Image 1: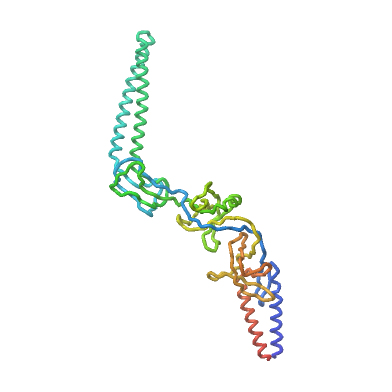
Image 2 (image 1 turned 180 degrees about the vertical axis):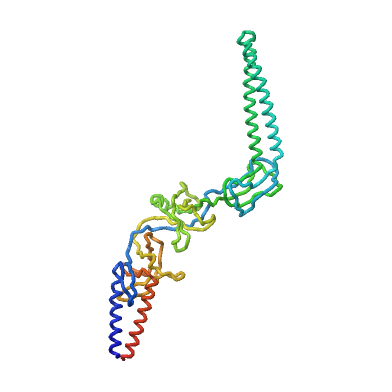
Length: 369
């Protein structure tokens, strides 16, 4: 009976050894009894070598709304952190003087129009007399000049009326775009004057990353023109960049050049002031890579199930940035040519079966002795 049990155990170990040894096959392999494992071979691939630099998210549109007319502030309808829609009324300024100026402009326009009518009638009458030869040319020229002056007076009055209407509209300060208020610079009762700041804010419709780039990297980064915005410490959460603007001058105090990174998704879900990193391609190099799905992550630790010498092992690895096409860079823990399981869950089951077989083999060996 003991010999039969030892023979069956030896047969199971032989099947396990033969199954796991096929792990170098890139498509599929069999490990630990009936658990089938798909595998992949660790290879070196050509990838962009990057340099990361600190950056901050900022709004593409951010501005301070200032007063364009004089008057005492009578109402403020929004405060810091409030969301406003385009065209919303932000601040009201006392409009007494502006309304009086508007009424005066309207009266001036009526007077100019009346004067124009009288000048036109006089000019038409003198013109008829002049054609009949009963009016001297000097009288005709004077009537013509008065008529043209009346026309110019109407135009001047119309321009003054338009200016008065515009001055009245300035007493109602409205939001130039939808966004969030970041600062309020005045209080109710203060005197507003042209150029006095009233409110500051920004639009969340489009955000960009502002990165300070050391000037020695500018030529190669300008030549490559490839970058991304990194949102996490591991470098896996990224935003694609659609446009990169490199300033044509350097800060003499920090020896850095400002770079603006415009994201393809316009920074959706981000907010101004958020710390990020700008990742810039500086060269291409051969790096170790494994499929991302082969990496098992347990908190901050990462590892893979390696098949080697007919055995399956859990190996802790240190991963780098995503390389595209489902691959991730391996910085430490593996070597080129290593074979890893693509499904960590099935590999865990295979490892348990392997340990169970090892325990049975140890027990059988002890009983045989």
